[in-house]
Amino acid sequence: MSTASSAASPPTGGSPPEPPAGDPAPAAPRSKRSPVHDRHEAAGARFSEFGGWSMPLEYAGAGVLAEHVAVRTAVGLFDVSHLGKIAVTGSGAADFVNRCLTADLGKITPGQAQYSLLCNDDGGVVDDLIAYLAGPDEVLLIPNAANCAEVASLLAAAAPEGVAVENRHEAYAVFAVQGPHSDEVLEAAGLPTGHAYMSFARAELDGVPLTVCRTGYTGERGYELVVPSEQAGLVWDALVAAGEPYGIQLAGLAARDTLRTEMGYPLHGQDISPDISPVQARLGWAVGWKKDAFFGDAALRAEKEATPNRLLWGLRAVGRGIPRPGMLVRDDEGHEIGSVTSGTFSPTLKTGIALALLDPRFVLGEQVAVDVRRRREAFTIVKPPFVTPGVREP
Image (tube, rainbow, N blue to C red; front, side, top):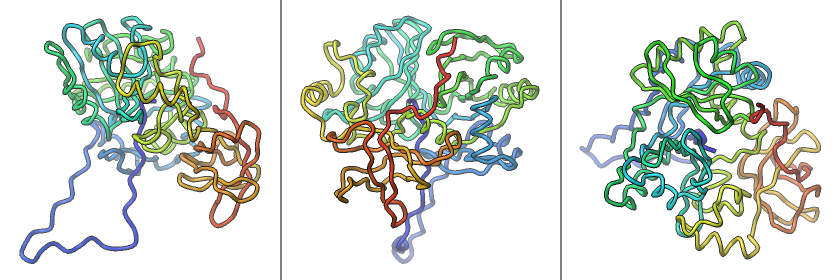
């Protein structure tokens, strides 16, 4: 889903070349910061780069496991302001978006949101995102941080006269209140709750206009708030105060990753990418196959009719192995049959879990091996989600 980009790691195995004598070394671009960066610093956050943004990875006094458990059992508060924001407006804006993205926007009505994909000509995924349909002439898109500029550029190049595509990446903050007590927190803050899954409502908090969306990336009941950046601090402080009686826990993007992996939600750049299609990633449900056209439709229709050369499955550890992205998957004779795209320790299940692209000959229930730290660990092929979702609870 609209998702966080993976944390960037420094290269290993060598130093960058020295600049020519007399030329100054190029300055490293500074990561962008959330409008509430100061709140994270005060809370003892440890930061990492996500899609060019410095965002909280985890918080002092809690950590990934505690933050994960809080979201599953009580309520957590995430800052996901690094996610992109693109406004598409003008006469026929919704119809234009529908001709570009995979999902059929005609199946929802104003006030609803939809998970969708922007694909390239080969059927690979340029990005996955959420489209918020305000009306026939207004759509808000929430893409991933690292891909926002590219998505905006591709749409702007295709837009007909009268339709404007505006990159509003830094104009808004996005906060996610996720967990079984998310409704109580929003109600205590005076915000609307109880609307249907994948719908949104306009509201105000102390005079600040915002949008409350029944969406999220954790698998728990929850909401995402789209807030003007200039007033983001006021809204963040109000949510923290409203959540105190319910044990609200600030949660970083490391816990967000373990939560979404337990749900089998894809992460762009790992489980889907320009080289990994929706058909391979089992995201055909997010493709409007009956639509006349969308970006990459010819390639996707051809792949759907044929047999894809790999399919995304879940893997659950039989023993104690903890899988990580890039680890090879093998059959019982040691032949390579695929690789892990996302892998982690599941705090809920207390075992290793993964998403992996596998040879389509391998099916649910079969046992395979993963190369984990020079050992071959046994895993069972399963169908995600790994835990029971609560996201659609009425």
